[in-house]
Amino acid sequence: MKKTMNARALGANMKRWREDMGLTVEKLAEQTGISVSHIQNIESASSNPSAETLIRIANALEIPIDLLLCDSLKGEANRKARIMEYYTLIDDCTEEEAKIIMTTLYTLKKELKTLRKGADGNKNRKE
Image (spheres, rainbow, N blue to C red):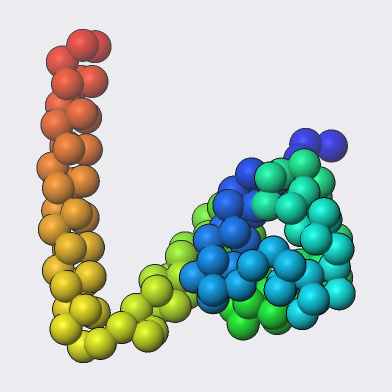
């Protein structure tokens, strides 16, 4: 059976959210009842956590579990998890910070579309 969980991305997401919360590995271990070594192994993609472990971690980080797993989700589930991630990102921002982030996203989206059109045009010329 093909693996569907992206352990490397899960570990990176977990570490990022943990650090954003200002938690050390030791503090997260204390809050979840999970050993320090197991948390380190998950963050380094050396081991895959059980569903129970993921629930404990998500609860301690005060985030939906989707934010840990979003890179393993496909299609609409991935899109919804990303929307939740964007919301969580700006949730604690000031109004001015949120405006700057949105302006940056709009600009980035426009540039990506321009690059994509250019890449599609170059691909069609080669054929």
